[in-house]
Image (spheres, each protein chain N blue to C red):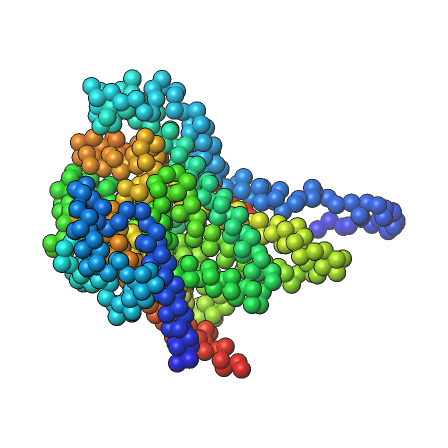
Amino acid sequence: MARYLLKKLGSIVVSLFIIITITFILMKIAPGGPFTSERKTSPAIEKQMMEAYGLNDPIHKQYIDYLIKAAKFDFGPSFKYDGQEVTDIIKRSLPYSLILGAEAILIALAFGVLLGVIAAIRHNKFADYTAMVIAVLGISVPSFIMATILQYIFAIKLQALPIARFESFAHTILPAIALATTPLAFIARLMRSSMLEVMSADYIKTAKSKGLSERVVTYRHALRNAMLPVVSYLGPLVVSVLTGSFVIEKIFGIPGLGNEFVVSVTNRDYTVIMGTTVFFSVLLLVSILVVDLIYGLIDPRIKVTSKEAGK
Amino acid sequence: MSQVQLRDSDFESIQIDQKETEKISGQSTSYWKDAWRRFRKNKLALAGVIIIILLAFMALFGESISGQNYRDNDLMNANKPPSSEHWFGTDNLGRDIFARTWYGAKISLFIGLMASLIDLVIGVIWGAVAGFFGGKIDEYMMRIADVLYSVPYLLVVILLMVIMPQGLWTLIIAMTITGWINMARIVRGQVMQLRSEEYVMAAKSLGASNARLLFKHLVPNTMGPIIVTLTLTIPSAIFTEAFLSYLGLGVPAPKASWGTMSSDALASFQYYPYQLFFPAFFICLTMLAFNIVGDGLRDALDPKERK
């Protein structure tokens, strides 16, 4: 177990190193300096600014500095917002995204699993078709269109929920639903097919022939085993919610990390772009590792240490 | 109960014609014929195919049907709702939305198709080579893919869009730079399974070269999953294009895609919802059509997976 963890951590560090290097190169070859703006700054001032931000150092020194700083999770100051550190921007905006993301993940999991189970139990009946139509629609309607539809119906027509911003729980409902739509549909389909597979397994027949009630068989025996593919979908789920937040936070005017990333992209604020990219990657790699570990724990058939044990 | 009458003639031997027993009753079907038979039964998937054909037809010829074009602006007629002159209304610069919708269809479908085809070529070659040779080659090739895969797809695309000059091909290149990995993984898995099959061994012992084994024997036998993946990549590419346009990273004006059209319409959708409705509707319809066709193909091409 410890060896497996160490190996995984090692590959995460390698991945991160490559990601950091690539973002560094990309930002160096990007057109337009960070201080290019409509108003022409005098060469003297520009030189001074370049000096202050360490942009006049030779490229390899800049790279090594950047690596060391990135390891300490220090991405330097923002080029566009005076006196703001990238780390501060991340710290400030992360809570919004975390709350929103957690809500979206919960919605997607709860309703996706529910829909999938209903479809599987009522296989080839009306409920199954309805659930699968909802799922296909959910996959086909992009999150940003979903967001606009939700805003139009619930905020403009019905005036039931606030249209944008992030002030109370009510404000989070629409963006969380919009963010959850696509993964919810994926989970429903995943759950349905895995549930159908499990329901025809031998141990379900055994359970039924022992005289257990339909309920117990479905929820205690089938559901728990059918959940496994959904657990392995948690990694992609995090990615989907994370990247979905770029657009959703923009549409709903939420000052989260996704919005901050989009703003930095439009502003060509390179340090913020690099910082958030690296941060997103860390978040993602760690969550995939956690999912791996959970998977090994809940499914004893998969031994994370099996390779070492075999030797 | 009636008595069964037995006659002598009942005990005569029937002449068995050797040729008759060799005859195969029922038509022989190939894999593709069989798949088509299954696919045809799927009404929903057939409807999807028809929708795609109609969309493609309109993308090619629909632009000028109503006698308008996509780029002429007419500020006197800006923001007009649908009418007999402007079938889908006009946008904030008075451009005809009907013509723009089908011009946008051309761009959106082109991006979707192109990106998916490039993914297909790179993914199939990469996956097939890794899966076929295995060992160290496989390990290194898939490690590269894993590292690329560990950065979220949309994040990579956005980063590339930032540093490259805006344009149609930039969009396609940015989308394919990590988009092929999914295809590569699927092909690799399939090839690894197939390479120990008898017919591969037979071909090998007949002296077939590696390239021949790969592209004459292994890749054609993974065609099913490849086609399914391709069909499902197209909607995701169309989605990505729309997503990027929404962030202002789409095709630059005067070109228009469904994504840029919906993005432009967003600011005023409270007052002119029809401006958003048409491009958004066609994005959803296209994605829906490709998704149900992809599902149908999966059911038809892979009977083992059928539920």
